[in-house]
Length: 373
Image (cartoon, rainbow, N blue to C red; front, top):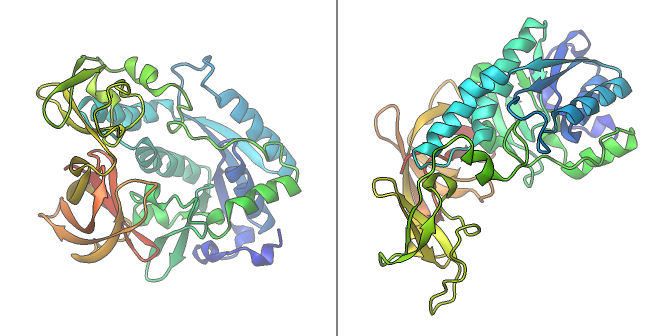
């Protein structure tokens, strides 16, 4: 890649790159590896840091940390940087996984990547990097920063890979210390760079599992940590159509794995999870993607977090209520200082308590909150 073509907006935050030390969070994947290489090419003093954050089943087929560390060391050797490993397993369990389990126990569906970014990748990792003498940290996330009156978080140029949704809980203090070198280039370019420079992990598959825990059968994994209680599955007329294995194992909008696929009614439409009644331990399902129970024009959210020093004023914005969703026009209202209400112009599908509602103004990510209702 011709570095003169690289969007270096992120360097607005840094004076004299050759005198600055950047600690890069390296996972063993291609994105963080190319991030480290790019920064080295731009003249930064680069240190790689590999985070180990899960130890419960190190020897299982789903734990890839051993191979990931081998890949990190191989990449660091190729591009000529120092690398160290740090263990944040205790912090992860206390700050992320415990909350993850509490939310599932309450019948909600948390987003572990949002929690992990806020508490581990940009808090525990940032603190450790500063102790190492870093001026900044960098990750392989697809997002951009721009410096105006303050550091703004923006969507990546490659909107198909944009990860600003997962980063909305970063504070202004954190954003001032973070750079995202991949924000201005596309994933296909990242793969091409990795191939061109001969990275040993150039063709490595992207991770899609739970943050730091990996790709594993989710229901089996959750069952090790949460008590389960079977209960009735009812349709929108209150008729029992099956039995669920525990409300924690289902999320609104879920289609696969409900266990009633053979029970078709006259419409022949597929079943979707639509409601969970914790008081009666009842799972409600409906037929058809566009069923009214799956549509909402309003939500309320709390646990607010804003990327700016000032919360946005009430007014017109766009928002996402799940990652793989187009921005939807909405109006923001405040219900006191710690709760918001979003009113959408169009109905939103399967708005899910525990997930995040993230606000945008154009490409700028303003922050958001955890959906309550």
